[in-house]
Length: 189
Picture 1 (cartoon, rainbow, N blue to C red):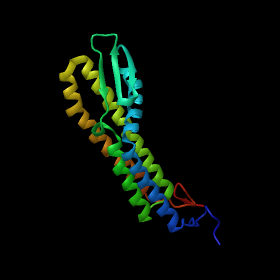
Picture 2 (cartoon, one colour):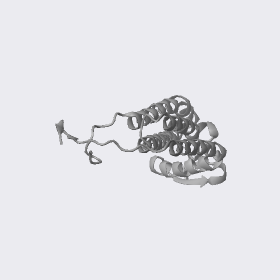
Picture 3 (tube, rainbow, N blue to C red):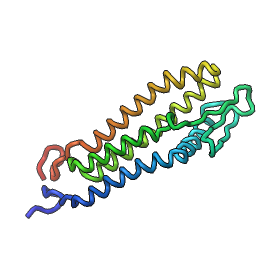
């Protein structure tokens, strides 16, 4: 009888456990949609810190309106509001749904699916914050014309790269083939 960890396969979780986790991921997607205003305010609060690093002047936050102000005390003071269309929530929701589908497929381990989904979501939040900071820098440097370019052109490219990276992370982490246990650099143990 093989010893666990030396050639033995791990017992799989019962189906109901995977169904419950898939349902939890779908509920998280629904909650993200339902509490989108709160999530946008969280993103604006994170963005305020990013703007404090990449812009001149001081920053401020209007939590209720999901607006981060920057350049306060300078001639280039401005505020950026995170709307529903600009929030990473609308990109995270489909990622959570894909994670739920992977959970039901049983083609990977629960921990890999959860890790891939979590890291993919973090990538989306990080790239959206990068986009937010870039919009502020362009706006402060070139005014409303800079805002237009950064928001529609450069920001869209960053968002697309973020989506591609998050899906790639999910696929690489969740669906990579299992390494054979009991092998060390090609040598059987």
